[in-house]
Image (cartoon, rainbow, N blue to C red):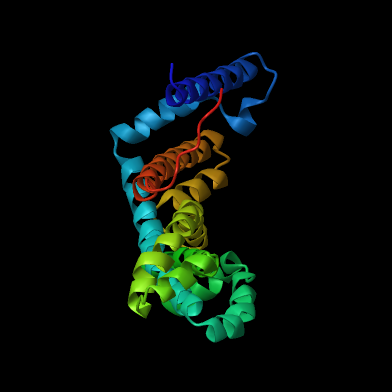
Length: 257
């Protein structure tokens, strides 16, 4: 059995054991099911929500808000990171201001965003965007700054233009940093959309969770959370595969048992 299949098998075993122990703990009374529900109840409720299509409608809306903000944040963050990284003086001047902005609790600014743009799609989009853009900008900036200076000097000796330096050295060196930031940004964008829905929404995963919490319905809270976690894991898997494609030029590490 190769390494990838072994990892997949171990993951499946770990998940199965967790679910079985969870169910047994509730059924045997070791844990009060009121607080954490149980896999069987969650499975039944998920089936019911899938049959009437409600879970799909709410999940689609949340993912639309999250990934619209994610896409915009990645594009703007990349452009800003390149601008800061390409100019040594500009990067040094603006770096402390970027760090100051990054320290702001953007989630706490959600009520202000609602005041500015209303309770519709825009507030969730902007909150997801704000959580992503600085992260991608910083990763791009650091990716450019981490370029091997010997490689830059070699390109200069060979007479490379500024554009050639940018396209063949700086951008390829940024790719691992951007992809690493993208994996983190996915969860950040989802958190932004969910928080926005907590503040004001009539639909979405955040709305479902808020509604269920108001009724003390633990199962109703767990179902949308697990659905969202599943979506996030699947998207992360796609990003990992994308990373392998774009970083296939890097030497692969030999995996050990």
